[in-house]
Each structure stands twice: as C-alpha cells, then as structure tokens.
Image 1: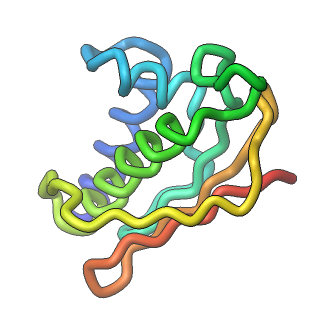
Image 2: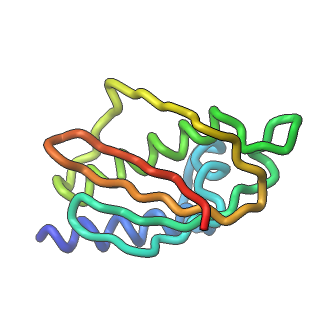
Length: 123
C-alpha cells in the first residue's frame, strides 16, 4: 500500500510538471520541468530547471516561487508516507544565496517525525 502512495505522487508530480494535469497557475509555474529523480516513503529527490517566468527583475529565482515549490514538495513528500494530503501550518525558510534562472537545481525533501526538511542545491 505504501508503495502505491509513492508511485501515485511521482506520477502526479510528473504530470503536473508537463502540464498534463489540471492545476492552478502557481502550481504549473512552480513545477514546470520538474523531474523526480528518486522517491521512496518519506523522501523525494527532484531535478528542475528554474523557468524564466518565475524570475525577479534581476534574473534570480523569485523567493515566492521558491516558497511555492517547497510547499508543494513538502505536501507531496508527506503524502508518500501517509496517503493523505495535508496543509502547511508552520513554514520557515532561510535563503542563503540567490539562484539564477535556467540553472538546473536538485532538491532533497525528507519527512522525519512529521517535520519536512528541504535542501535545494546546484551541481
């Protein structure tokens, strides 16, 4: 049963990233080009380019778009463990540097004791 949750979320994320599933504009923009590299119960690792349409005037990834992506992936990571969609109730982000658009990034999202952690990094 747990593997079904993982498979379902991977399929849904990939469909959303390709525009094959109905979603709000913010979800479509946030997930555009996302690829799930690895998935298991409580863990998602993704690769994605930063699309042009989520940049700020300086050509950096807009901080609101980063927050949207992290929120979506947090709920998705939780779903792989529980099969339930949950809402974010406490959200804290520390930004250490900017990211330029069209740079491929990777994310590592894990769920431990009902707390979702994220790391977004370049290679």
